[in-house]
Amino acid sequence: ALAHTNPYASSSSPDLHFGLFQAGDPQSQDSINVDPHVVSTSSGGWMTRGFSPAVVTIDIDTWVRWVQSIGMQPVMTLQSIAVGDSVSSPPADTTAWKLWVTSMVERYDGDGRDDMLGLTNPVHSWHVEQEWHIWWSGTVDDYLAHLAMTYRTIRQVDISAQVILIGLASPLVSTAAACQQSGYDVDSCATFSSGVEEITRLVREGLYDVVDLHSYETWAIIAAKVEWVRT
Image (tube, rainbow, N blue to C red; front, side, top):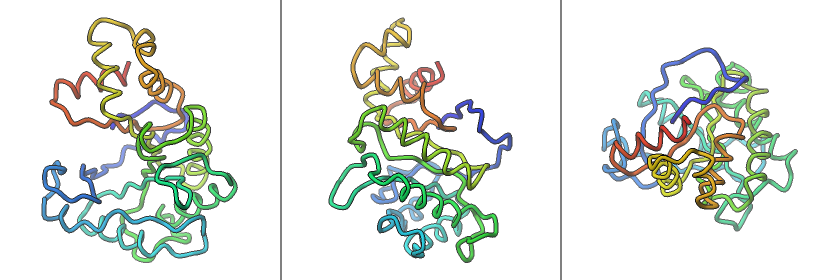
């Protein structure tokens, strides 16, 4: 993940213990710098049950306790998925969405007010939606508005929070990076395909602190992707 200059960003740089693993599919090859046994015993993949700020989310509490027990920094993904849908979409009730986000951040921010019982490793990293565009059914404009609304809601509760941009699907970033490596500028590469144009807009126009860059390639390709994001 890459830090993104943002006027709302906190000046502090905490030592966050990030790990890279797929909690819902615990295979050792999905892990970097995480004990395979830890991954195989992951209790991740918990979800809430709709917009119910007053309901204690015991499943998420269990996951947070597990993460903090192994010394890692919890990161949560906020997804607007309607009942019966398999992908996210803009929330139909933005007031309910903001109340739910506020409730979630307040429960896990570690400020001593309405916190989860036994919280020792607060959540300060919030990922807004899973992956572009595979798990998002709306438009770029829909997501940018959703991101900005969610960002401001999170930061009203926890000014130290880091908000993470929707994950950029590996093939799209590979195409953008390859285009740039071939000598074209970012604007020219954005016209290469609709997908590249979309992720270019997300990186440029989004209100966020951290980029979630998906990649499954060798280091040389990953480095090229990082350079594209930074440019």
